[in-house]
Length: 153
Image (cartoon, rainbow, N blue to C red; front, side):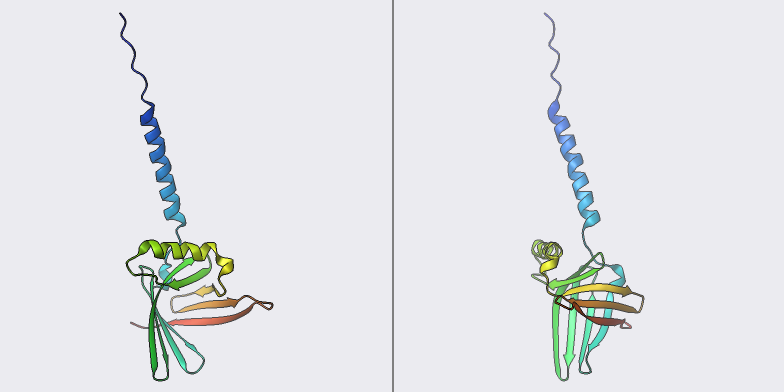
């Protein structure tokens, strides 16, 4: 009698191909993932008219602390921020612990860019100054320029 030759193990190749595909998808996701721009990190201030002072503090984990003062009234809110291309986004912080909800909100903002009524375009980023332009869509595409100056820490 002759010994039967072993059948080739095709399942191993399937696992290798699945692993390589998973690695490529993970690498592409990490590469194209919108993230924080290191040039924005720190505390920046600007004014809205003669009476309202605003201070934005950008953190490297994507948190944005917004402090506003108008006369005797002070207000602080927390949001998430990220940059994609020449667009600056800040979305409400759904939950500090729920990263899945924040990630979905981030991708929803990018994918539905046309549905967002207020668009913020990055005009200039320097060491001591950031110039953002808020674009209000409409018949005239009005825009408002915000110039942020770095606060010495």
